[in-house]
Length: 374
Figure 1 (cartoon, rainbow, N blue to C red):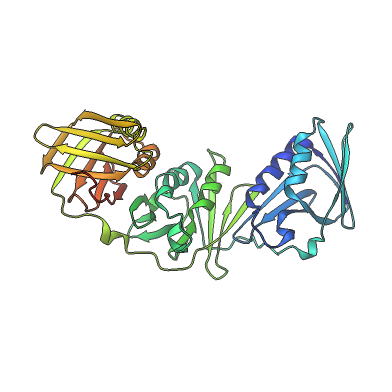
Figure 2 (cartoon, rainbow, N blue to C red):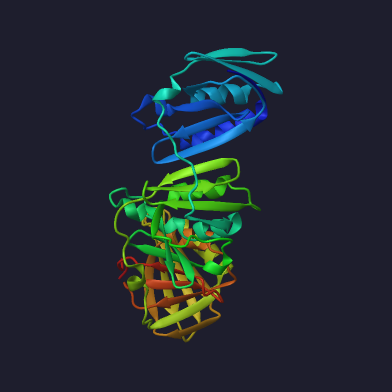
């Protein structure tokens, strides 16, 4: 097989497939990208068995053939060229490329040894705008666990409840839940089972999707996969096994105090406090409800200490002092957009509920740290 492609388009396609290449793979062939003629286009496939990417590049294709080639090396070479067009040829287990100014030959491996990737869509699919999926993932992914000891917790749960689709991420110390009305979906499967999709894979999907496009999501529990159709690009992800906690039961129901403040003021104050929390990783919040003030404190044995007072829009209930992991607060504040935030507090060490003001579709729960001050 021979082909001639626009070099820039070939390089872009290779860069996309690299997202499915794992440097930790024990199978050498999974370090390769599969190149294959397919209906007058060049198909590229990459997989680490947990996720797979299939995409195409249009060009002049002569004959049929396939091969797998070291993905990173091929991308580095093609991306480094300056010519407009690139020619490729497959002969046995050798792949040669050339332009007007350069040529190279890569030792490949037979495509027959590459795992088969099924990206055929079924009837069990829904369609969602890329912008809506992005906001749902952006506002929940940071609460998913990074600890592989509980694989199900490293994902985002997609669960239908009544007339809403819930997106939920949690790690045992924080929880983020986004409600998406089913009416906002372009189409919906007749019988959608609960699915836990790896958070890191959903992040890759929204990064690759065109902002103004629709994304088709095909749930295939029988094969343990979910397929994302991104227009000339398929992203296949494994569905995570395991039990997802009853997240509704951990949402605080009986606060003893609450306060409301501007999102921007809260974010800036936590950023300043983080300068003095490198060692403790903690920030302390001191609430004075009658004075309608929130003092934010942090300290470092070597660097020094910091204190900033914020004027609250509203506050009621008991005075309270709590501490949170500063990175957890920043994750929430950096990913959730709103004008004001209301915080419902149930006690010094009891989970606190953070709600973007005027929004009924989102909430965030964070567990305070144990008191470390006298």
